[in-house]
Length: 205
Image 1 (cartoon, rainbow, N blue to C red):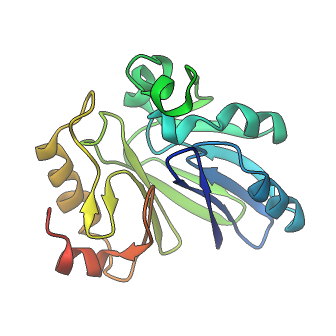
Image 2: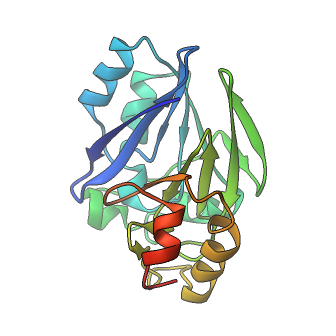
């Protein structure tokens, strides 16, 4: 699988374009629209099948509408417990971050452990509450897209609506630290890391 990172949204969210050799792929966490991502998808002849949201904060959903216009066949995927956050601009902080209210209705709501296939690549959704109630990570092909659950030597904030420090620690210990150490972590902010590095160096967990 090939993965490309693009910085979007006023607060620099990592938005990812991922695809395999079949040319079918997906976008993760479009905090804002990226013409560079669109150009890359076209250069690589990528068929964007899904727009996957690790959680519903405004800095991770602000570009959904424009990307849906660009890739009208793409279906929006989110965790089932994140529906409230996605549909309520008062609690998803989109007014403050995107300077406009943003609400999303996902096409597909998934549950913990559910798998999907894009092209020839299978991926698994992992419920990791703590940053938000319905936060999730996406595990596929040696990578885990961790959203705002786990950063390089850091973790997501837990002082927002639906956040819980204890839940976030439990999610990381029980859902992420059990993955192979060489699993590459692709977070919602900051640079990539690995599970092994975080188990040895992350001061929060």
